[in-house]
Amino acid sequence: MNDIEIEVKFHLEHAEAVRRRILSLVGKSSDRVFEINYRFDTPQLDLMRRSALLRLRRDTRCTLTYKASLKAADNEFKARRELEVEVGDFDTTRRIIEALGFKRTQIYEKYRQSFMVGNSTLCIDNMPYGDFLEIEGSRADIRQLAQQLKMDWPQRILTNYVAIHNLLRQGEGLDFTDITFDNFRGIVIDWEQYLPRITAG
Image (tube, rainbow, N blue to C red; front, side, top):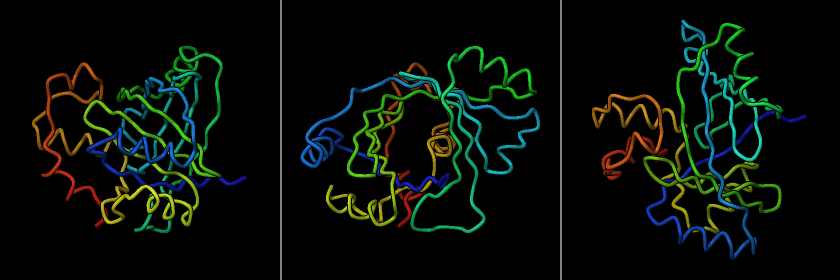
């Protein structure tokens, strides 16, 4: 079983235009779904130091996910090891994780609409701080879909939403760690100053 996740992201200035392009490829879309994610770590932040992630997510179902960096660097795509399992009860799973010594270090929210194109998944993510397109699949399919959707390949993003938030915290002087719509209410991000720092170029 392949447990390697390969993806890229693009910041979207006009998310609706990209949604229409995707629909021209697939003809239909999934429902737009609200997600809440809990990120866990040890009290010493051992997972963060290893560039690993332990996440509990609730949308239309509940999933527990572990992600970790690969030994070989990839400058073209974001490639990570991903292990994911569906769980039956969000709160009980959270209590089990905490009983094992992990603590919740962050909450992040988003609205996601997913589309399947062949073996690839495209997601339009409405984050509290902006809109993004995520393309996950094989390297060849990701490149082809990005081209079909008229995305500027050098503007792809290879980092995650938490790292983007950390950059915004520093640049905007934000005093909160949770990426929630309430926290970002009234905050307008000037992406022109941040995109050169997160795009692959």
